Image (cartoon, rainbow, N blue to C red; front, side, top):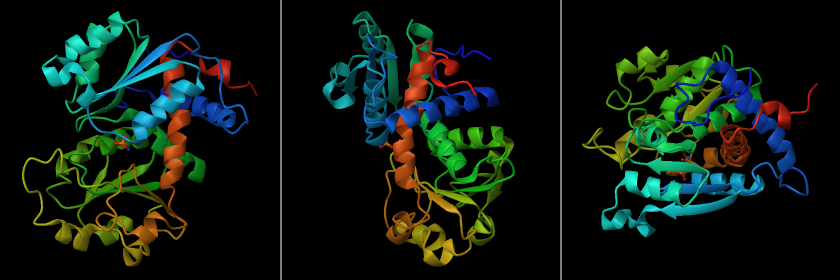
Length: 314
Ligand code: CP
């Protein structure tokens, strides 16, 4: 099937075939990133604007790096240095970016649905780099790409997502990607942060860490999203760590070969101990590296590129 999507707004809307196409294209780009000359001319002459109205380290830098590796010109604008601080609306900001002849916009915003809104009012492709607690599709794609590198097919694999699920866009995007890829997903944490209604997304809901971690082949830790929580969801950080923090003893409940993942930023000593974050089972920095190839694939495909133009035929 040819790639036809111009925007990347959610993983929920992607088909399994589209997820495979992005992963296959990223695999080809990852090989290019391993060469001494890491740049290809695929997007030469195009201008990509990274509009980040919420803080970011990994996502913004990886989109920036990906655009440069594809030979695009890239301009980054953040909230504190943009005219949004003078009262300009998102609509006006985005329409001005289009009037400045950008070819694509990558947006991070605290409001769920803002990338969808821009996709309806702009004539250029819109890429969601995280919208509120809704979705973070490029993160879900790089996480599942990393899992597939370690495990091969994810069909029937037990993947545990531990932490603040309720406020996590990373959790939602991973749940959509993993269930489409056939994984058995368990979400675990305090009942205030892991509500029963997530079962409707096809996952197992647990509040019992030991049984959730038993035989898991992947555990993904999520930090507490203080910036999105509106009221106390648990008594204290110390109590959360005592009950749900991943330490060496609890990691012993996992499959011994299980990989430990975290989208970052990490709060060391809260959701995960340093010896595990930095240990042999951790693939946290591999996730970050894979973020470049995945974002190259997204920028390339949504600019009109086709997977077979990058992927050598068998
Ligand atoms: N994982 C992630 O979205 O990290 P940043 O907020 O640093 O981009």
